[in-house]
Length: 342
Image 1: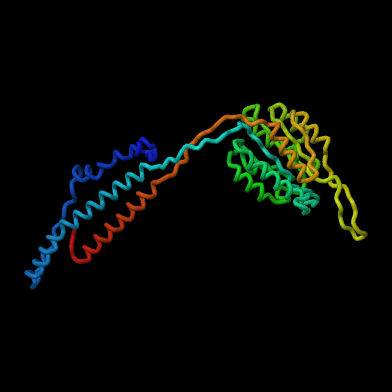
Image 2: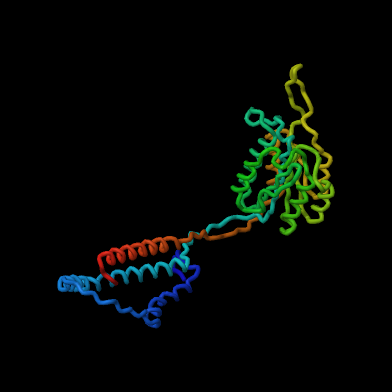
C-alpha cells in the first residue's frame, strides 16, 4: 500500500493490518455490555441539592463522552497505522560494483612493532605504516567486498566480506600489536581466507597477505595452505613489510642491524602457486606503489547495483497514540474524581 503512489514515497510493509480498523465497532455491537449491579439505597437529608448537581453533571456528560470516544478512535487508528509499519523510501542510489571479493590478512605479531618505516620524515612502527596505507587502499575499493583477517600466533576473522568499507577501516585501525599472539601463523591465515572465499565466484577470489616475518606458529604450513588456495582458485598477493636494515642505539653507540627475518622464498612461492605476485615494501612509498599496481592487476568491472534507502516511520503514529491514551486516562480520572461516572 502506497501514499502518493506517483512519487512512491511512503509505503506500508504490513498493509493488511488496516483490515483491523473496524474491530472496535465489531466488539461494541457483537459483544453484550457487562450488566450494572444495583447499589444499596442511601438516604441523605440534602437529596434535592444532590439531585440538582447530578442533573448538571448529566448534561455535561454527553460532550465528555463524545470527546473521549473521538480521542480513542484516533488513538486506535494511529496504533493500527503504526502496526502497518509505514516506511519512507528515498531516491534510488546507484553503486558501481566490481564483483571482487577481497580478503586482507594483516600480520599483527610482535615483530610488527619495529620502528623502521618512515611517514612524512617520522619513524613509525611497521603496523602503523601498514594501517596508514591499507586504510586508504580500502577506502578506495568502492564496489568491492572487503574482509579483514588479523593473525599472530592465531588467525582471527575480524570482518567478513562486506561492502561496508568504513567498518573494515575502523576494525583495522583498532588492531593492536600482539592482540593475536607474538608469533606468526601465516598458514592459518591463508587457510581461514580460503574458507571465506571458496563460496565466491572463481574469478573474483583475491587475498592480500601482509607480513614481516616467517611462519613460526599455526597448524597449517604456508605452502600447503597455498596449494589449497590454488585448488580453490584463490589468487594471493603477498607483501613483505620492513626495511632491510635499521639503526639501533646501543651502549657502544649506533649500530646498523638486519631489519627482519622475512621469509621471502616462501612468500614468493605462495604467490607463484596461486598465480598471484610477490611485492617487497621497504617503506611507505613502496606500499603505496604496491597498492597502485594491485589496482591495475585486478580490473574493475562496470556492473551496477541500485537500492533505495528505507526509513521506518512507525514510531511517529505510535508516540501520538500513546500521548492520546495518556490524555484519555487523565480526563477520565479528573471526571471520576469529581464524582462522575462515564
